[in-house]
Length: 193
Image 1: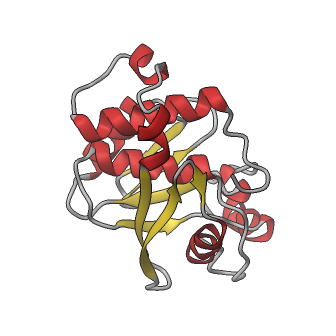
Image 2: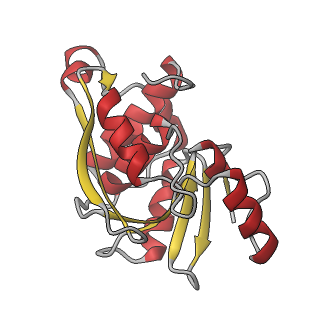
């Protein structure tokens, strides 16, 4: 794991269960099913996680194998942090592995391997303060500033589908912004708006 990661054993198994459930089916699962470990032993060590994204602001894109054989790959994590950087200040920040796992689980839940279009990911304090002063709905203590939130869309799925899948995963906050054409997901407390 990378420095600062708070994904413990229980969190790992919860998210692994969500990823496995999302890849197996698009059936709505009860929250108890998400808490049970679905990938263990050799299967967990052999499993991989790949993030497929395009930053719509910079045009940068990539398909990144960032987790394999039970560990996050530091060099790949740095490449992802670069793509998900604050576009206004060009500042990078550690992106929570939990957030990347959530995006991957969301893609599997939606049965899509298309790249997620990233509208906004990491935001510096300066950028967030500027946005909060000029736009409604920007939190002053945003999870974006911690590398724990992303605003995204999936071109081959409707926003309502992305929102619905994110709500089913119950892995953090889900905000729905149809006028701005994105869904916000974060790895904070489970909530919706």
